[in-house]
Image 1 (cartoon, rainbow, N blue to C red):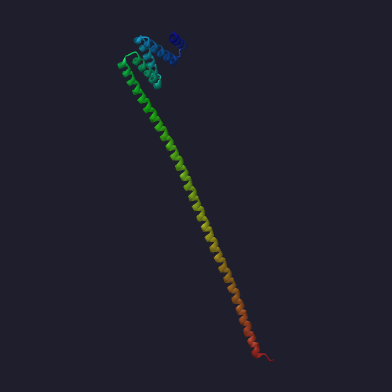
Image 2 (cartoon, rainbow, N blue to C red; image 1 turned 180 degrees about the vertical axis):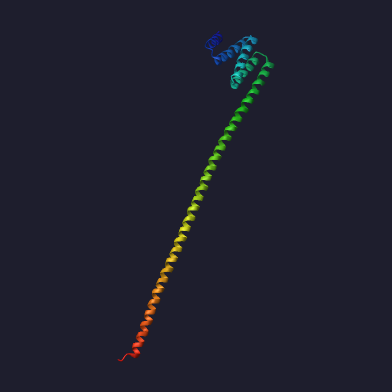
Length: 186
């Protein structure tokens, strides 16, 4: 009685999901009470609803309950047939779920690979920047060293010229002294 009331209420509310659940419950109850044909028809309507609503898990659950009912009322061949259909659907759900999980893992792996490649490229970029900076510092140091050598060379050259002038003056002074020492009347 309660199952029939639930089905009537679900139909009144136009809630197809609740209606399918109520049909399964009422159908299983009728099947256990010996009204197998009428009960199975209600359960199959619910299964048809689950197929159309893309709810394979609900269909799998319903098939399992139907197989249990067949087994308990002694219809073992129908129970086996229904159980095989449930198992086939379970395998499909498992394969779909596994494929989705593998796909998600692959996407995650690819994303991590891209992140790793970006980090590696950033490190290589930083290394190249450091090499360029080091090269610039070496060039600057070489230019400074060359400038220093040139400046020291210029200073030495100027000192040499000054020393040469001083030597020329000293030479002239020595000649003058020698001249005065030989010719000096004292």
